Amino acid sequence: MQTGFQPVKIIQALVRHLSVSSKIMKIFNEQKELIKFAKTFIDARIDALEKDVHHCLSEPYAPFPAILLCFATIDLLGALSEGNAVNEPTKRSKQYMQKYMYYTQEQTDLLMGIFRHKIVHLGQPKQIIENNDRKISWSYHHSNPEIHLELIKFTNTKYFEVTSQYRIEVDYEFNICISEFVKDIKNSVYEPEGYIHSLKKDTNLQDKFEKAIKDYYDPKK
Image (tube, rainbow, N blue to C red; front, side, top):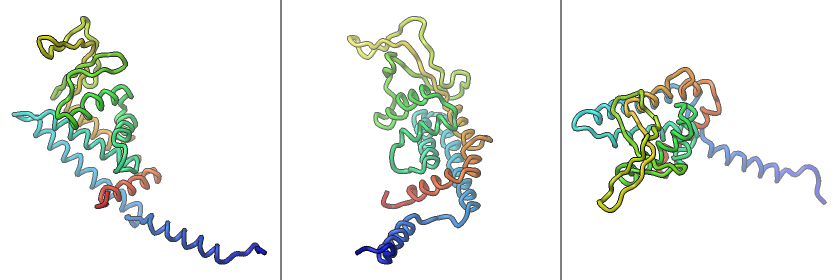
């Protein structure tokens, strides 16, 4: 016959709870320490981004590494804001750009599809991509903020000549200004509605930051 009081099961439940709690180890003593660490950690990354991109945009120029550095920084910031430094880099990067950089879904799709993925895997962007039945080429600029993220439709259809026997029709051109891209990343962190200010006020965001930092430094991941 069972009774309402079962001390063995209660003890077992407590042991399980303590076991789980021990795995969720806090790495900051208090909120103030977390915010100070976050500011120092992110400041260092933004400072490095600006210096490295400045070097890449000086002669003899290295635009693709500069663009890749931008995406790597966005990936890191996305990991911190989502609490995941291990999985789904594309998803968290897009979420970060849309939430803190105020990019549209189309802009993030084109940035990732044209520049990020192809530079990582092919060493440079493909000359033409297809997106929503549009053939889109691209152009990068060192400093031309007016045209940053602009998708321009050609008045007349153009063609990209691959060989004398093979050419590809082009309808649009997507533009990126590298210096403006860096500025957008920096502003996403430090503006009044940016990540750092949100982190100071949002305990859920603080928990995600702590989890991401543990992932970031975990030798096994």
